[in-house]
Length: 490
Image (cartoon, rainbow, N blue to C red):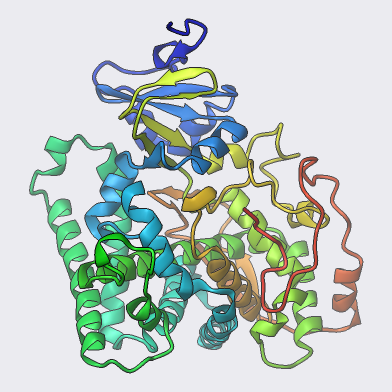
């Protein structure tokens, strides 16, 4: 007997102002964040159209979590991941459900908690080197500077060293070309994506060069069986005893896909998070002064070390709040592997779902004063796992979340220990919406700090407790050594 009480996707309301043939493609291209936030009144689901096809956008945190947790049905797929696969193939972040469990088991040793202190030492050193390279009065291209910082850290943790300067410069330029093209290519019909325009030729050349660089590094490493105690050596040595068909190790092509995944992910998203954190500190000088006071107290004139992480509470809250306001993965898509019911709606296999951390993170019923930068909302609260999702959730949650958090906290600490940051000009800076929520074009002015008197140290002790913590948040627990003080739990 058919269950007539369950609605179909056609009953889900269609977002307003869809155009014939184009659907909602134009507002998504013109001002994606404004369009996404215009849908905040829909509390469960809403349909959006891209050309002749439609997708269901999930607006409810509980339903979003249901999608994340059931990856057997709601698989990685849709226009975002189709475009990313053009560059990184079937790496851990893009592969289908059928491939994921094996790849996750093979990649997991590279991110074991015992490895984090070693990675942390690299992050602290990279942050200090970058902070030492600046001069009083410099006006920084912040995103570019953070990209060079995270590239250095990523290359050392992955490959036990940095690329030659010219290769690194080219890799940064190629990454910028590739990443900036993802969103527009996602919105462009397939026929137009194939046209040999100058932009298409630049995009193809950049992604081929990135792939060739990674493949050359892997070939050299295969020829040298020495354990370099880095992420690539761990990937090469990983064995999956549960693997079916006797393929217990990663092949060269799989290694290349995973290396590109971690290279781009470790470099670009953390750089963007750091850039947004610095922007928020520059535009909130009182919080910047408190963070500097915390840094002075914790470091006490000594060298930054990953062992300081448990004491960097405000720095961790700044990063947590930055990821709430500016989640790099601001929009995600999933594809149904089979027919399913979600929130009382029957969805057909092959349907596309859209999930938006940006939308959930700025809902006023989930966060008090959602557009305000308030690191103290996390003082006595931990991020709620349904309504705070910068890393996703479930089996497909970002494998490098603690890696990225530790890198951001340590790099941020190294920078504010030495520098005051202030805006350039009076105009508010707006995100550049790409596949990531980019800070490209952000500029800040540096002033060398006059460190620490008693008045500065007192700022941290006098910090107010926020009244805006989420009512659904869970109590704080004491973190272990060299771990992010704010627990971004599953």
